[in-house]
Length: 274
Ligand code: KIV
Image (cartoon, rainbow, N blue to C red; front, side):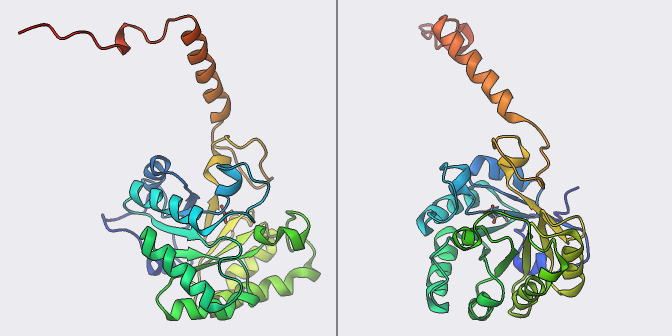
């Protein structure tokens, strides 16, 4: 179901107003062409720093740079018209100070034309989020599993599976909401905790591995299309494009070698004179 009602692009306040209403459908997009497809059906497109792993074969998101995010953010903006485009702030571009975060986020907004940025971290980032929001930069938060912290976390593990660990995750989500974020991603969080946070915060929670209790959902597009070789438990593959692409590529290579491609339909003939 598409909830787009007119031709104007959705804004951060539009998404903020969806708390407790029709769930927010969000997917990642990194290219103009796929952005055009996602734009027809989703409310929000995230130019996620997962592009480092998906597009560049990196092991983690840590090496992703601001220039990489801006380049793909521009492509997604060019390919879309209606969804709110949110661009991830990459590791190292915003954590040192709120001023560093402002300069980097302002570059993202000015150079891509996107409508909001996303950054990871709860209590520790609350002051920065407030600083950005007060200066005109809409912020989506991201708590629970925060992949940019992989080197301190040690592994990509689900969070809050023991109720004894709930308090700091709840505090993170509340801090992000109180700081003025318009929505918060809850990543890889046990279902009852995600439901509790969704009840407790006034902004939409967008789940990825955090259950249908959230106010919306996000997945990495390539994961749900069956293009990623390994996916976490929380991903549902809606189709399996990997084998279909491989079959097409194999057929193409075979036809090239057999000289059956290009065929008569794929060549230019000489124009008839007159
Ligand atoms: O980078 C990304 O794709 C993300 C989603 C997993 C939420 O942050």
